[in-house]
Image 1: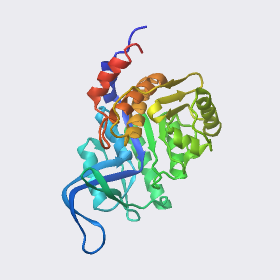
Image 2: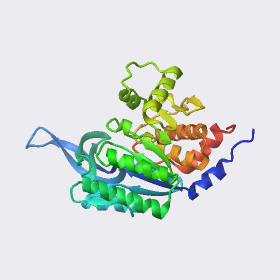
Image 3: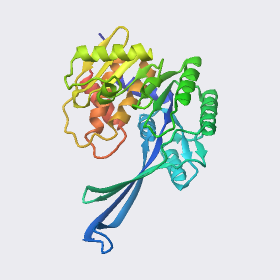
Length: 333
């Protein structure tokens, strides 16, 4: 069997259009020193020496896709505020299209402020509104998505749910229906609240904890039989095409109508698991849109998830590193 030309595959990413719809966030980091306790209350005084703002939430998925060279747009609702403007600028600086973002006077842009001293988290402050979108904002978001489809006709749409209120059941149903009508692939990174609203999608990617919670499965044993049962239970309710379940340090599992495989993780020095799920859904969606090969999708996303765990903090995948690893580890695909 001829080996896959990974250079050609990675070059083909630039022809793919992707939309990420879901909860966008701003990640703010304040670093400083603690030398004393406040005279006003028994709390440390952090003398802030450096501040940084990064793209978080669904934006991190878009950041990974942009880093792999594809055309990516984000579709979401932001607050009409300074944090929203800052996030918009950051997205544009990273070649992410923001033309279809909706601004709302009713909402805050989610901002997670982490205060860090000597590499220790002292505190996290979350400025956000997590209520479901109002009917008016829902309509605006759906109209914006329709305008995006007409303008761009993407290859794949990723629904990225962080339970912050943007992906309501109405938005989910309308987005999936529009994608089906326009023959656009759909991938989902779900959360518990709307777990069973994502019917008829192409790729459903929960992690093992989320799927066990969603299906009320108790116990820690992991076997291919259990994963097969999980897929069948999900399929009964969702009628989706592929289950793609991330298993943390144990790798990933995929199953569709005819094929399934448990793919173990490649041994690495794990520094930080934050953001790995964002990288996995980004790589899986892009590879599947390019190849329609679920095994290759699972293998490459598995490698990518491991690679970003070697870095501290939420980072996007490095395209050159991923290409190199795929050539080494998947030479006989």
